[in-house]
Image (tube, rainbow, N blue to C red; front, side, top):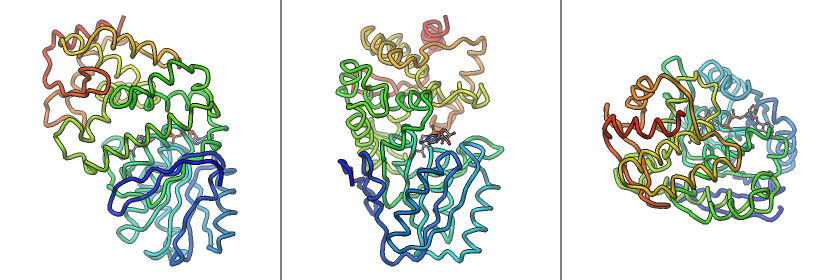
Length: 361
Ligand SMILES: NC(=O)c1ccc[n+]([C@@H]2O[C@H](COP(=O)([O-])OP(=O)(O)OC[C@H]3O[C@@H](n4cnc5c(N)ncnc54)[C@H](O)[C@@H]3O)[C@@H](O)[C@H]2O)c1
């Protein structure tokens, strides 16, 4: 195994997230497992073949299940096909699923694992930056339905997560950049060191093999791990509950929805973070310097910081219905300073609009 770091997520039972280069051989499979289903899209077939080799070498039977790419695989029809394949191969509760791919695939395969025989073990091997720092850790699994995105799902933790940074080599530049938006979010809500690294080593942070990437990824995962350990099912009302991970997501989700999910998630939350920083400033809670720092750090990666639309009222309506809002209350996670999250409920239209004007010009 190459150089790596291990983060233990305090769940029940706890599981390890391993981050490093050339670490696909760190996959750990219980002896009681008989067969292993590898679920992946064709885009990451090469990575899947390496894992297949390793699992076979360890003496387990492998069943390959190739799924449609990205969001087109994240639906009930694909789930049903996988259930059928598991049935044909007589998968029992002591067998194992390994998810390989971006967040869409790990969400899909995680959901299959949560539902097959009411829950079997799965290992997550995220191959996008967003998958590593966000989707693969925290136990949220799910699919999209006609009712909306991610509305059907289950909390089901993986038994191991392997973030092999070398797998990012084939990732499109834009996919890497949009994943960086979640890393930056972690910097603002909890860990200023992330922002300092990005500001100090801008070009190193733009490459998958930049020397600072392992530290940025590890720091981001640690934040998610700590937050979800305290509030697994997002029920806590405290300022350190899972809700803080939603920083920038309220407007971000609305932009994704109104744009029929053509916007990449990281781009949408980039705008969302600038908006909510402006909102906190308009409410007298956040300094202009910190607002500017949002713009500077995000622009460093070419992430969007403005959004042109004549549809602000519609966006407000969507934001009020965001699943993370409570009832029809409009509620935002804001910052009072870096690493000092707070909540802003039902802000007046005046300040909502004041912040909107700052990002929509
Ligand atoms: N469960 C959670 O907590 C959570 C959190 C955040 C996001 N998500 C979900 O994650 C999804 C977004 O994840 P994403 O940004 O990883 O998108 P994605 O899964 O759609 O992957 C983006 C693209 O990159 C390709 N790809 C993946 N790895 C590659 C590699 N190494 N080389 C080349 N191409 C590769 C994919 O096939 C796809 O075309 C959404 O469905 C979102 O709902 C879930």
